Image 1 (cartoon, rainbow, N blue to C red):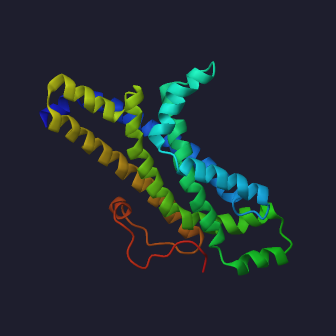
Image 2: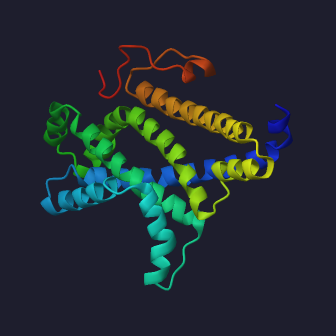
Image 3: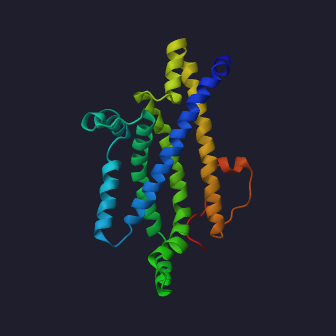
Length: 241
């Protein structure tokens, strides 16, 4: 315990960098996932082809390879050199956004066809149909998987230590090198990663609860501990009743 307490400020700095990369990478992934996922639901073959190219290209490439490409290959073929932090956010956002796009596309397609037909019968424009009917229901459907993707992105952010970003993994490596305490160095990092993951889980489950409440599936109000527990069997998300 003394090892961790004495070095807590250093670990906290690393944890904040990890959290910042996670938040920025998730924001980029979310924007890409929504845009590409919606493109994938359109009847226009060009839009669907563009969505497929992005999804298959970045889903099929390891985030680590993307990271090294942006960090070391781009400066050799262009006059630009990207900052290590930006490279980390870009590589993780592009990679996770490809998975998120499939989640968005599947969630929109899962909305009952009868509701889409009803909006067409009411002469709603495509934009109004998407904003008022389809996305609110698909949003609740996609949030649990988005939560998993955010956690995966947070764990994958450890690779940014390979391009000299002082994140939590980098701090653990430096602590091990300076103290030779391998178990304590990486054990402290494990604890910090776990705490960050719990914060992200609480945030995502709060969003899930709000989305379901808007659809008339309001769960009983609970404590913070309830947000950390997995949903009970039979919990429904997605379409309104």
